[in-house]
Image (cartoon, rainbow, N blue to C red; front, side):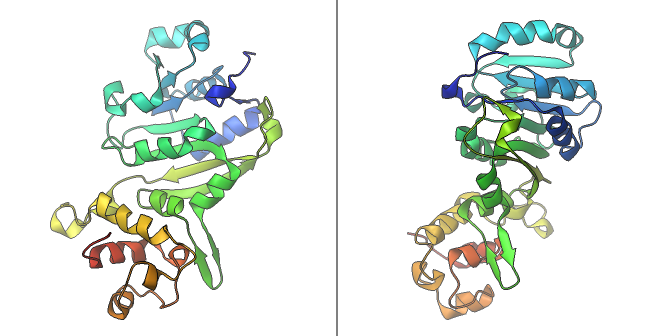
Length: 271
């Protein structure tokens, strides 16, 4: 086993049962195009190739390149596996021959890159059809959000993800399933049905109905003082609240995705 690099956020997943559940969550089938970030020692890669997927893996760690080339020489030779030595933050999926909505992103990612990876791929013009990611447990919980009988609780992170896809908390992964053992528990997170349809009004022939930048300007402003009531925070009129079906005393965390969409369309300027 290769020693891990803390600077790269490496923790090798060692439990094959968890690997199998990742593939199940991603509904990985023969000939699926899969992008893997940070294959490490190739545990997840082996499973993906084993079901017949065509895998492109991007690995930043210099030490692992020769090892992975040797380990998967047969699959590289057949064209089933492509190894890219590089930084995933500097690689565009389109440059890898991937097409919008025609590949899956499946990976045990460095946790410190979670936000950037989500933004880069969800906002991309070459989005994956779905993602299955190993992330920190509390981050997965925030992304999925929570609902009690009388109250919805969202975050800027959950709204940012739900604008593009449908997140699902697949399962908790205890810290003992990794080597070295991290300081936190993890979770398998599925984001399915990824698209930009939320920003597009289908009846207008696919024309942009709401600017992505506009939407997120409103959301970020709304969450900038999340303990305050949204009416005062965004200087909303009673009429705007009524149009968007938002209670007068609502806070940013209480709004649904559709209510944020309504606000973004109603508000003329965000300062």
